[in-house]
Image 1 (tube, rainbow, N blue to C red):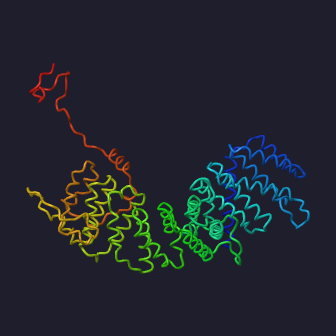
Image 2 (spheres, one colour; image 1 turned 120 degrees about the horizontal axis):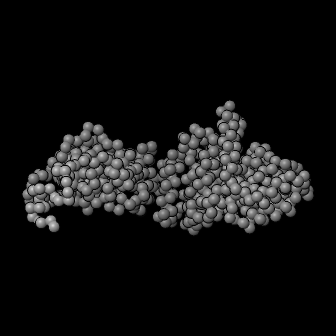
Length: 511
């Protein structure tokens, strides 16, 4: 019953989308008249159909022309004019079938092109023709070859990522499309990623649109239907099996990758693959190599994967805190994945059983970086330092470690060049950096560092909203604040002369 209800909901949604799309699409009137004449004729004129296809092939300016092909062939498939109902020789529909295949070639070429509007319309027509084929030709079974051709067109696209992939996202949320895509992906995969980097990027981009998360599973959307209870069109276990097979193929093709492609493999692994692997412990070597052989984003993504394995598979990695400590350097502020770094560091440093000298090194490194960082990152690091002081109360002595009224120069014993956080001598230092940040030009930063001279808060700060903030948000917030009104003149002026006993008239004569 649930599957039937889901199928009805999917059908209603698709009909709604078709009506809205038909209203938006502008089809040339001349071409529309030719299509109507072709469909209203009692006998199919294949020559007229050939002329319509040729006209659309020669004109690639208007994406709405592709909608004509959808209307024509959906009607012809319904009338059994494309494929013969019986295997007759000679095939009476051979010419129409050839023109239908020619239409698919045209659609796939537009789908692999660089024009976003053309690619989106071509994808929409392809997916609607798949529904028509399944309904009128294959007795509600998936024409898998057609979906394989669509995925292959994405892989061979001129652009990276393929411009049509954004439109494919709504179809990828359908469970039957999701399962069949994972089943067919190994058949369209590039043999070696290093030899075909553009195709490899597009292949990984397809996987990035195939979300097997709880939200998608709970929605229970289908493109063709949920199938029967005996043969459902989607089961999580089957889809998971296909996903694991796809990942094994990626691993076989991923030797010798450059940094950009290697980073994309890790992104796909963390976002789409890792939660559904049957034996994730096999990733240990791959993630360890990525962590040690690369720096920056790749090492950060690998560290996130290792953290997941530490949580779920109970593996141990002794140097994880040293690697995490060395990821905090000035260039990290321009890293695309810096929010992940703060998130991971916050989780790794949650335990109150960590050695104080280790956590003190992170406190000093974050405080020192706050002096050099952009405004929004400085606020995050100051709040992070405050949270660490609340978790590890023994570190609060760093606040008052150096006399504030000392007249002589004091050297900082903290060694920021030391790679091992335990050997940085951070416990002998102080948080003079935060005292200096109290004089920051941006009020938000100065206010965040006030806890050094005032009492510490009782609750930790939530870093989540700060990770999403931008410098423009800080500027807008300051502009919206109501500034205090100060009186600039206490004597009401009666003429252009300055007030009596003014400081200016005491030293200058105003002519």
